Image 1 (cartoon, rainbow, N blue to C red):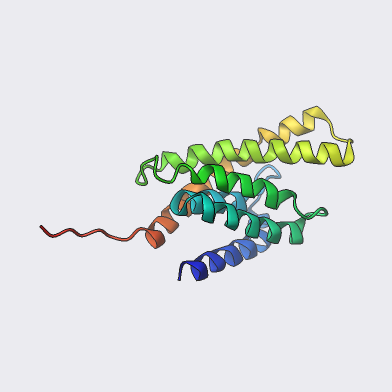
Image 2: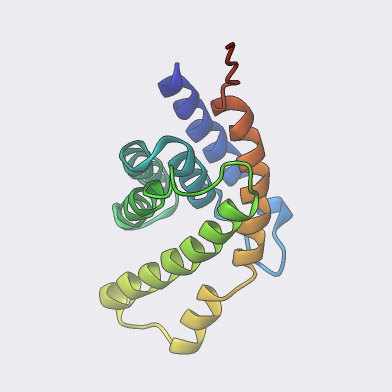
Length: 164
């Protein structure tokens, strides 16, 4: 059942990211909801599921948007793996947890992506790179992380009833 939920979430996210979200761009920035989805899934399911899911969603993203297949899947694999370590370390009720991880992961994602593109093309300016790393995308992703976290907390959290 969890696999079907994760597969449906990836497909719905991919559809939304390619159809709806480009129409709500702000300052030329579209939210990276694939990254936000990986962070939320990794926080709920751990590093193994987060890393495998990162590769899967990254490959889907690479096939649709990227000219080079593998960049997004590699970066999202590492994001899912390292965020998955925090599964049992942080409180699940705190909305600040996904926001902090989303801000850090957005900076990491854009920095590594810029580094890989630099080595592939070698025609990228430092100003443009820093502008992409510290752009409005951080705020946009943080807002979407709260929305995704609330949705998936209702899906993945089971009520615990104890009778003594």
